[in-house]
Length: 364
Image 1 (spheres, helix red, strand yellow):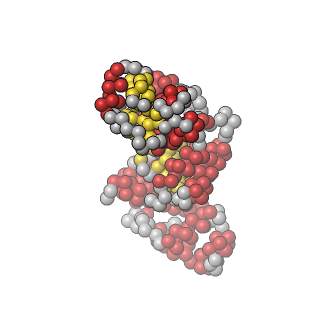
Image 2 (cartoon, one colour):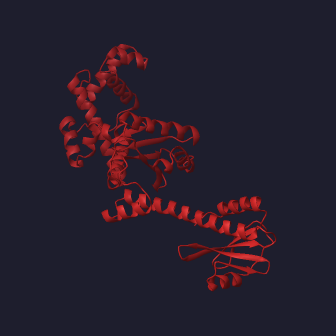
Image 3 (cartoon, rainbow, N blue to C red):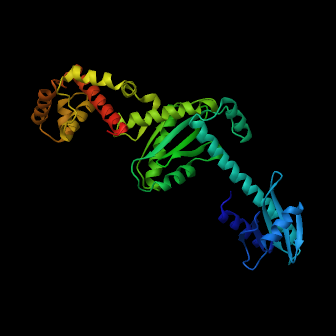
């Protein structure tokens, strides 16, 4: 149904144009809104008018107009018969309310359609039939973006920001399947490449941070060419979101096509992950390294195992960094100055993060 304030604004604008007071009643005879609080018509009169089957009818200084959706009455518009424009403005108001109702219902239907499409709740034949009914192009190229807030602050504004950035008139649709995420089904032009998709994600992060003062993580799936494949892009974006949070926590953007080794680990069974860690470390699996050690490891990897550059960026003496690396070697049995050991530790830490994710998800 249309928001009452939207109808009220419509009637106010029509009154300003036609100098005629208007009111809207529902089919039970209750007043929805009016431009003149003195306008009073009994519910019995409204229902009697609807039962008559007439499109319009005069009644004690008022004129009533039926508002239909198809063949079914949904509202009654009433105009005051105190001027030559009363009949004209009443008909215009009835037409405007019907148009608003149709647009509102279509918007709701599209939202419901895309939610069910994303969640694979539609049969293939229903996808194409409903898309045709809702005037949705089934052969547009699209990619699905998931925008997830990292905290609970200003979450209500994120949806408004995304809707302000992307319009259905350009083939973009914004919806949600839970309260923490906003989903953008983005129309992709033929000449857009991977960098364009990443640029859109970066713009979303920046604009939400600026406009909604919220910190978000954005993931996106690959481009699909038909409406029935949108759910696949959503699943890819869903995986990209999970993999990004587990393995690349410092980054705000995750692309399904760029998940790297994180994609492989994410799909490994838990028992195989534990077997791998026990094979490398025995009973001394480094599940809990301190923040200083983790920062040292990350920066060392970022600088391609360069001791001098890492010590400079960490603002520590070279000998201090070497001491930390040797202390780590005693703990893990791995010397990260050697490429093979560094690679083993890198993968091991990713596996440890994955196991921690599984533990949190299972609620242990």
